[in-house]
Every structure is written in C-alpha cells, then in structure tokens.
Length: 355
Image (cartoon, rainbow, N blue to C red; front, side):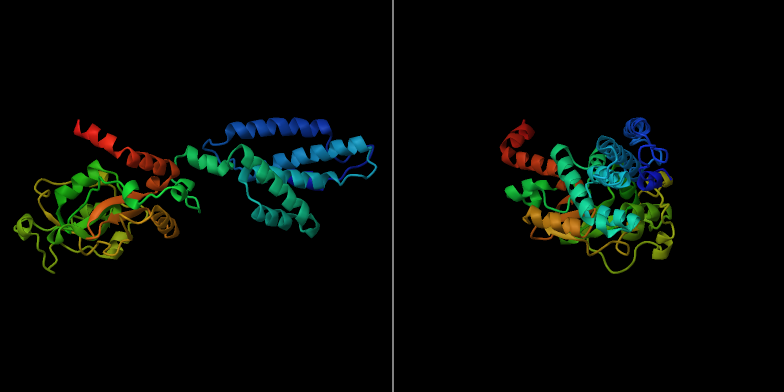
C-alpha cells in the first residue's frame, strides 16, 4: 500500500492536502534506510527487493516534491510519482546491479511504455555508478558467506598466465578400492568430510574405476550391505576381482527413498567384527565420472566445471591414474593466485619439505 501511494498520489497544488509533505518523506526515508542497513543479514525474512523499492520510491518522491516546491508547481517538472518510480529503479539497480530484468519488472508494474527510456537510463547510471565503488550487494553477501561461486567468465589471472590443472588440484586424494573393507570405509567417512571419493582399480596399477558419493556410502554402511570377512581372503594379495557380487545388493530405489534425509556417518554404528567385512562398491559406483588431464589448461577446466555444474573433477595422468582432484574452491581467483605463486616458488617449498 505504501509503495502504491508513493507511486500514484499526485501533487495537489498549493494546498498540498492529498500528498506527502517533504518532512514526512524525509522522516520516513532516513530511519527506514538506516534500519534496513542494520538488520540486513540477520536471520529474519526482511528481504531486499521491497525495502529497496520502498526506500527508493520515498527518496525519488522527495526529490520530485522539492522540485515542485522550487518551481512553485507551475508544471515544469513531471509528477512526483514519476520521480518515485525512477528513485525506486535507481536504488534497486544500485543494490542488485541488474538492468534489463528490472526494466521489465518495473514496466510490468506500471503498464506504461513511455517509461522505457527513463528506466533504462536510470538503471544503467545506477549500475555504472555502483561499480565504481564496489560490487553488488548479492555478490558481497556471497563472499561474506564464503560460498565458492564461479563467475561466468574465466578469472583474469587465468587468462594472463599459463596455468594447468595439475597446478591447482589437491594432491591429497583419499581413494577407495572397488571392494573395500567396511572398517576402512567407516574410518574414511569419520575422518574426512569429502562429498565424493574416487575408486581406483589396484589390479590395473591404480587406474580410475569410478566415484562413490558420501551419501551412498553412509547408506550402505547403515544397511550393512557387506559380505563376510572370508569371502575374499586372497584379494589383498593378487588384487584380481571376478564378476561375482561379493556383498548383499541394496536396490537403487531403496537408496533414493531416503532423500532428502540421507543417513550421516554419525547414524552408522559398527558392530564388533564388522570392520573386516567386505563392501562391494562396484554396483553403486559412477563408472563414467568427468575427468580432466593434469596438463589441461585452466581455462578449459574452468569452463567444463562451470558449464556442467560439477562439484568435483578428478584429475588423471596419461595412464588414467588419479593424481588429484579439483573442487570449486580451487578455481576461485584467490586459489589460482596462490597456486601460481607456489608454482613460481616450487624450489622453496621443496627445500622446506626437505628440511
């Protein structure tokens, strides 16, 4: 209702009976903006769109009201409602740094195509002026929350320097075998919070077999989908596996049925003697994960990661052996700068490790 009144109330002339006074608009605008700034970010549904729209409309109407006062209401300037609309667009554009979408939204709200050009000019001016000082409020909040958000374009540092995937990957990769002991899987999930673990085939010199998600592993452990300890006594020695299934099979619909309340590792309780039981991961593994070679450029890796919406990317060598893994945090500009510095000072890091 307040926004509707700020947009549609018309100036009443010298009597000024059916519109807001300058003092009322000022006393509303200043405390409202101050309180909106203070309460932003707290855990209440206060929002950003409506407060920005309302404060901008109040400030725009105040400017229009003052112009009518200076002009003695002779009709030189547009109605105060028009200034309220432009003020709302300016504050929204400065906050969100959006242009085309806000223009369409405000045009749909007004239903008048004559405001297309003023709205576009106002939003572009607000965007360019805001970019001089800082980023948009949504972008700032993403960084405050430490969310690894990847921009559409490749970071500038990746365009200026020759960086390959092997420089930015994490080399401390925790892998599993296609058939692993339940105790090993349990301790791995207990000690590490990774969302996915690569599965390597020891029978072929550690080549990549697939990946297993943390949620799936927790579900298998909770349902005790493992075989007896003596079902594969010679596996540790030769590493060869036949096609025979070595543990009870859990149907895929049973695993999916737990969504979204999948079990965690805290919900799993290992009984005495179950640590040596064998867990056959072959029926559940993703045997065709996305991979990238360690010599691939970071531009190609970045575009592949962002286009497909990946959460991780296995890095392999020419023999398809896992040598590292890349996550979103490894592709941020800060991480790329650190990897570039480490690559230039590799001899210093080698001396420190040797000492």
